[in-house]
Image 1 (tube, protein in one colour):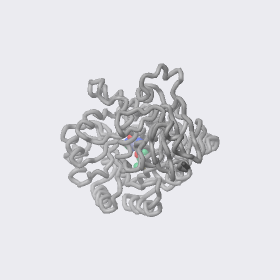
Image 2 (cartoon, rainbow, N blue to C red):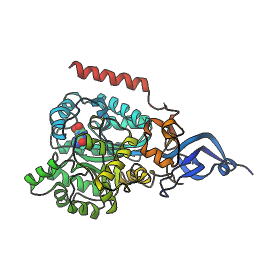
Image 3 (cartoon, rainbow, N blue to C red):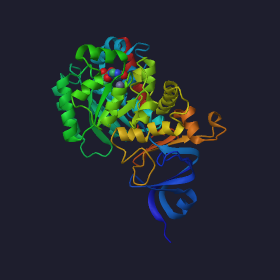
Image 4 (tube, protein in one colour):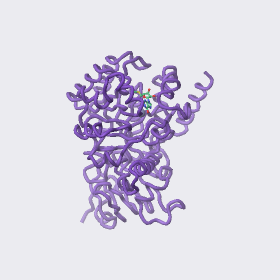
Length: 440
Ligand SMILES: CSC[C@H]1O[C@@H](n2cnc3c(O)ncnc32)[C@H](O)[C@@H]1O
Ligand SMILES: [Zn+2]
C-alpha cells in the first residue's frame, strides 16, 4: 500500500479545533495539502496513512486556529506610548490627529504595519483587520509578510494626508479594491471612521455600495457615552438609531467598540445580524466604556475581538485581549460563569472569521478550511500543572509562548523565528521613526 503524499503533517500533543465546540483532542495530527486542511486524525493513524513532504512534531504544544485580530490600526505601532492616559476625545484631537497630520505618509504606514505584523505573528495572529491612511501600504506589507488581512480604507468628512474628502476617499478605496480583486489573502472593506466624523450622505453612499458590491464596512460605533450624548444633541437620536435610519446596517456591518448600549440598540444590532468587534483593552485604557459581551452573545449577536491600535492598548497581543475580554465580561455580567475559556477562544477565532465574512475559510481546524494555525508551547513553569489546555491558553499569558504560525499552510514563524519579516530591519526603522518624532 502506498502512502498518500501531502505537503505537511503537523502533530501536536493537544489540538483545540474550536469547531466542534469545547473539544480538546490529544495526540492528533492535521494533514495539509495545497494550503488547506485535508484531515484531522489521531497521530498514529496519520503516520501510517500519509507521506508528508514536511512533518512538524509539536510535543507539549497546543495547536489552535490562528487568531483573528478583527480591529486595529497597524501603523499606529509607531505611536505606541506617544500619548498615554487621556480620554478618547483629548487623545484623538489634541495628540493623535495632529501627529498623524504631520507624520503619516506611505513610508510611515509601510514601516509601522511591518512592525505590527511582526508583533501579531509573534503572538499567534494569522489574520488582521486594518483601518488606516495609505491602505495601499498596509496591503503591500500584509501581502509581503504572507498574512491574511482585511484592509478597511478610511473615510472621513475632513481631509487627511490620504484624501481631501469623502468622495476622494471612496474613489481611492474602490480603486484599491479593484487592484486586489481575486487575491486569496486580502479583502478590501469600507472604513468610515465613526458617526461623529462622517456625515449622512457618505454613510448612505457607503451602505449602498456595500450592498451592491457585497463588501464589508467597518466603523467605530458607540465607543463612549460622550459619543452617544453628542449624537442625541446633534441629530436627536443615538448613533445606532441614526445609522438604522440611514439603512446602514446589514450582516456586512462591523461595529467596533459598542459600549453604552441600551436594549433598543442591542435589538437593532441583533435584527440586522450586524457584527460586533469588542476591543476591551483599548476601552479600559481610554476609560471609554464597557461592552456587555455576555448579553450580546445571549441575544445571538456575533462578538469578535480586536486590539485597536498600539497607541491605545499598547500591544497587539490577541491572547492578552481574549484574557481581558473574558475577565471584563464576567465583571460586567456579575457572573463568573459567562465567557469561559472555550468561549473566549471562539471570540478570537471563529467569531473573528464570521465578523470579517471569512468563516468558510478560517477560524477553526476543520477539513476544507485553509491551514491558518498557531502553536503554543505548554509544559512551562507558568503552565504546570496542566489540567485543561484551554484554561492555560486563556487564563495564563500565552502570547509570548506562541512558537509557530501558518497562513494557508505557509509557515510565517517557526521556533519563534520570523520567516517572512526581517526582524532587525523592522526594529531599526521603528527606532528611526522615534528619533524623527522626538527631534521634531
Ligand atoms: C480611519 S483611519 C483610523 C483613524 O482612527 C483613529 N483611531 C485610532 N483608535 C481609535 C479609536 O479607538 N477610536 C476612534 N478613532 C481611533 C486613528 O488615529 C486614525 O485617525
Ligand atoms: Zn480603532
